[in-house]
Image (cartoon, rainbow, N blue to C red):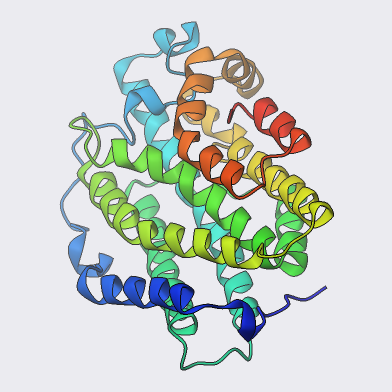
Length: 303
């Protein structure tokens, strides 16, 4: 199945205005990570990779068993796992956007912003890769089965399903990074990369929301239910794979024991639910928060 371009009659002057404003914003406020991030300074030994409150084990007895040095190591591996999964999903995202814009009018602001977003995502992926290398943390790739699911999704998803999948991944990470960029006990390299990502992804999320609304004009109940289910399944895969099981080996923990603690961690569940409030509001407004989808979001602790 291939993406079906939006019919010209469906796109309004208001849609084009949103894309033009996003283009103007990109021209005014964008970053070059190669020069904005301090890649040369040594990493402070006492800084975490992310706010401790965002660690998957924070609030559990297992977290309290760790020494301060182990907690720092764990958060550095956790943030690099999230960055690595982010790179994986950004590569899926770029392919879907390119496919969506295939043979569309290049004079349109929508087309030009879509390519601008792809350029942003390329820089973000390089930035995350360099950050992980700087922290001397290996790449945490998705399991083979999950990687194949991603390959399938980027091949078959189109319209609101594609942009909905993009949105759920970006929204969850956005809330986390807004905390990381302000964390006094977080590594400067993570604070800066988070700031860059938050600023530029805010435009991407607005674009995704607009594309979803545009795609759903005139959509029937069956299509909305099918899209809602697919988006929720993508959200489940992304959220449950952000921190890979092998991360816990980095501090000498038994991965199975650690994963069991994560599954019981009510603090973690609360943080996830809070990070998804605005996302769920939008999905509800768009008619993409059906009962089957809500069941999956609840199982994923997103609602």
